[in-house]
Image (cartoon, rainbow, N blue to C red; front, side):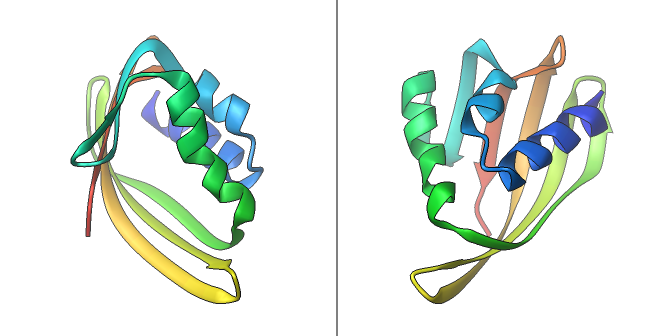
Length: 110
């Protein structure tokens, strides 16, 4: 289940399909864009994701390194160009699924 969800998440990210990304989350989700920024509203989450529309994506990888039941830990690497400047990040996501949708998403910084 985790691989399928993550594959769709990556696909929608690369397509910059924010509405489909939002569809991957339950209505009562908890999402941490950073360890300190908690989001529980889809409109706010949509605004957070709008930033990818300005990115020229060069690389995106998402790799599950630990999965147990409906929970997974995912290594994330992202490289893009924004305003003629190359940016590169890597994080770990802690994700919990409920009936194929994400109800908990926690981003741990580098």
